[in-house]
Figure 1 (cartoon, rainbow, N blue to C red):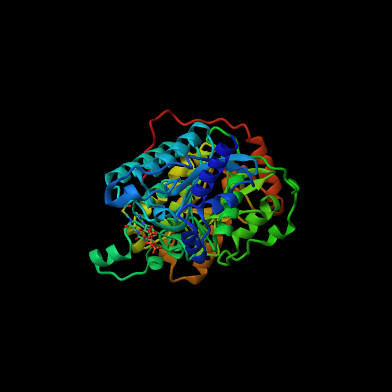
Figure 2: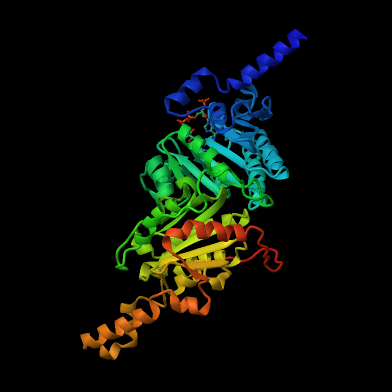
Length: 510
Ligand code: HXC
């Protein structure tokens, strides 16, 4: 018996060595952790249960019959994050460059199936050279199997991808279909075709970092939701994110003990929105002062900064925040901001996460570039997402809610459940200056008349009272009591029931 146990120990040790000491050292020298070290950091200590440690590829071409490594370049299994089950797979770059073979794909699809069947989130850690070149179509088939499962799991369980090394070719499309992509600065990059192919096809000279590094994907392409400085930080932040998310679309949001006072008043909010409507202020200050313990997990913080999206908790329960940011482009809605907001709203709606919207928006961004870029369809994405969402929706208009953007930002007309406004709110078709210039064009050479008309427009429309008179605003609230009012609203809405008519799926403008 002793001998048999020893043999198991030895075989396990061999599998854990992956591609061997030298390759592990090379991995460390690049500032990267190994697949198993990453899993250790991601999961609760000692909770990892590994599957398929002894799986080997079955390829024979190009000398592969002589090259074997137990595990076949990916470490898979499940464990817990603060006690809650998650499934995980981590590409092992030390084994065939983490490349995907038929058997490697089989290991991933096994945990994908288990995650879906057991309704728990799945996290993929990517560090790979793409399709196993020696395998050809068997590898392509493997990718297809992974992709299909990504799609079937979408909206049922949270799927998270963390890019921690190369992620190229076939490897990019699985992350692209998951809910969130995170990257590690300077050690990770993502592209469909690398710099060499780009040079051949388009004659552009570009480095891997310039083509698909974290700075590109978090700022320009919006492929990635956030970037972190190193593996350790990225993995610890993933633990934080998991704490915000429900395990599946049939689960409620997790509830953690809150050490914050649900009735907390914040007097500084009474002066947050400057009297001068052209003066900016930081909407993140309002978010920080509203959520439990100021704890806010921002999504896509570096992209379309004119809208802020992210998770916080109110009285211990997760809430998704969407907020126009007056500090950037006056908080205007452009194509990028609309896409960013829409995707976030849809994630929240999939996973029963109530949405709180803070509104200070001067409208949609005018301009040739925006119109040519498809602003109509992109803007419609956000409108569509808010309108179809059935989760509790609480809206607070802090200042401007102009034009179509008023409608879009979780207004009463899009089934907003509770619509608050601060006394500083201005709800109108457009700002007073623009309005007067159009409707009193004939008086334009008479500054006194124009000033009088502007004042008249401001008093009539630039206050929350006209909307409140119609019931479009449920209540005008004191800014200092924002947190308390939202907590109460969400508590009232906790058992909200609302269903859209049956359909196979909707046809959101893409
Ligand atoms: C087999 C691979 C591999 C691959 C890397 N390796 N990529 N083995 N298939 N795709 C092996 C290398 O042979 C090497 O083995 C080890 O992994 C480490 O690779 P290096 O090249 O030494 O590492 P590095 O210099 O860091 O470069 C990393 C890399 C490069 C940029 C990822 O390896 C690379 O360009 N790989 C090929 C990328 C690629 O073209 N993949 C196919 C994409 S097509 P040893 O034994 O020396 O350690 C694709 C289509 C699928 O994916 C589409 C589905 C929809």
